[in-house]
Image (cartoon, rainbow, N blue to C red):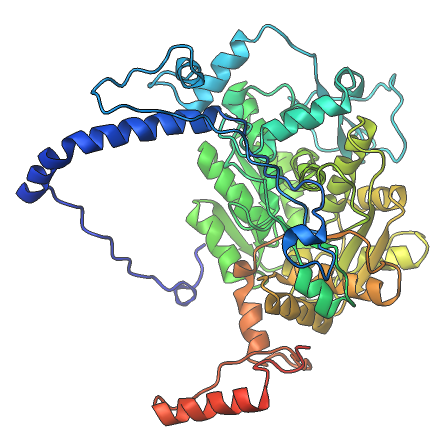
Length: 592
């Protein structure tokens, strides 16, 4: 079924005409030929020299003294960049010879370039086949357990098996051979991961696959389906912390929504679809991949399946996701079913369908996705130069992501990259808060709820699949759970936007939780805190339009910023601007 025609407004794009070569252009070529040839040699040599030089680390390093920033009056928590690498000085003569010294670094790099008819995927396969060492890294499925599994346990499964639950019906977890990983110390892993940042070498240019040994160590590079996801920005929210969180000066936002499909779900979907691609290559009976979704999962699944040429089947709750979220799977060619139920109903149906048909289940019940999502935690540590933040706040709906962050941090601690893990906070919308209620009851018996409508639609889930994982992660990290009402989350989102962000409602939930914990004194003024932004605000523009139009029932919309209707003449415009400047009227009410 397709969406209503009125929901999608076709746009006409005008493409520039192709440039034509004229006789004048031809004559100019002759005139400037000698200078251009020299320029080409300079550019080519400089390019080789630049790529041979030590790569610039994209992660922050140790803090700069305040005087180094140019403002000695206040401390500045923004980590400094690494010093620039030494540059190779290239001298080019005006002669026609373009030869490069065979002993130079540029010549060495040129020698090891891949053949012209070989792409980066084929290059990776060739290099893997020619490697003369193998550390024996491996991973397998085991039943999820709050305590470390007995090494001699009987129940385990190969990652090449199609299995979603244990024999007892419980969740599965991907467990790595930690003993093999420990053969290399923490400093080795830090150096290895850092060396891959910002590269295009397949598949390590991805923020997920740069940690391949910790994700799917045995997968062939040719089976990996990647859109170079991850490596997302860690944004210093200086003004938001100062103006809205009682002067916090070490507040950061991990912008996982700055990704291929606009949400953190890309991090997990690259792993799942890569493994499905491998299974299909191995001849497993899989005709496609399916998921139930509140919008972001379906967008990620559809994009990665489209990249791999694998059919995608998407179950969506009718009229409960944004237009942008609906358009994404449609545009990527997925088979979209709009169902008259909520997410929990869609989830029940997809589980029944995938148990009968050869459609691979892609929801977070499948633990493969969490292997990709955990790399965001490792990235945070990298970006802090392997220093551990005090708090990490994650919005929670189906609750797989809070466990993924715990798993990433704990794996770094276990393998010696860091000596502790941060305290985790799971933030829920008050209209869909089963984990919050469970936490407030002292972790008494868990009771699902019927989720009410919330602007944070992607976490509008009343019976989360990963409840046991989330409880384990929070208890193991001495974590907390907080909630946000609809007005609180929308106000927090609007305040974030006023400081330069363009936040989604789910990030508003996490920011609202931060404000509450700061006001209660749980989080200190100088605590290094990371708020995880899970999606891009452009996917939820409808909620922003409603807020700034003050068109939401029973909501004051205190930070609304509607446009002013002014006559299109000089006098009217000047009168308005003079009034604003004279009275120092803020365009936004109560923004201070």
